[in-house]
Image 1 (cartoon, helix red, strand yellow):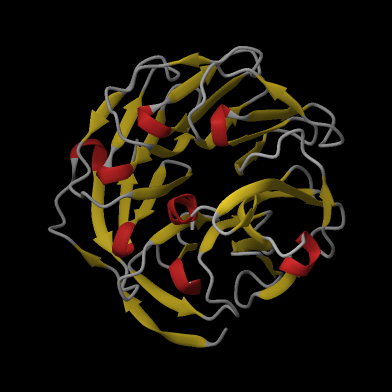
Image 2 (cartoon, rainbow, N blue to C red):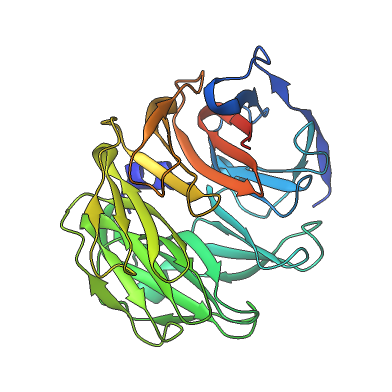
Length: 328
């Protein structure tokens, strides 16, 4: 797997980490920049289960938790030195994180994390696996996507699923050998995957089969977000933002007024959406993604992940940067 793509994505208490604000001045759009002490490592993912409790994960197995809406953070130990690429909770007790080639599971509200499955080179003819994104379509059924590489060259995709709430994981062949980077489900039946070379895969039968959708682009797509069966958005290289209103049968490229790579997109409701990317880029839409307006983020660090819990938004990125927005 390529180092560049890996970077774009990637239990006792170890100590209390104070979240330091940078100026405490609200940026345009309400984003306040702060920083978690990661020892210089980047943060690759953020997830909040409610308005107070959340996690950030990053390079070299860095994981930190807050129980007070980001005022303070407590470092947590995970048995990995690989980059944590994704964190996702199926409910308030059961959650998953992806680090390198491994899936970790918590059943106790994130107090401790245990390894559920690793995909070792011996299973892939000596190739290395990197896992990027995990989502559940129902209580028991979940999906993970990623890539298989030899000598930093992607040779295959990986798509694995569980139907027993993460106790076991099995591989399914995807209709693409290209790198698969992010997955989103809107129901127990319908889901989408995006990845390299403009790839979008779609399932309407709970992942029993996946079909390709035509996006009209060959840039790498890093993130997809759907609201309901019809409306969705995908972001990627060179400011690419795609929009669909028919479940992905057609994808339309929407101007974003930025040229840098966009890495994550999230809609709060049918109208209001945000996308983030390299060099501290933030763009906002208030008309279902038809038009986008650049926002001031007060940081030049790359922003890798955005997440909303109700109207509270969080974005994380380079060297421990954390942005919070009361986006009402």
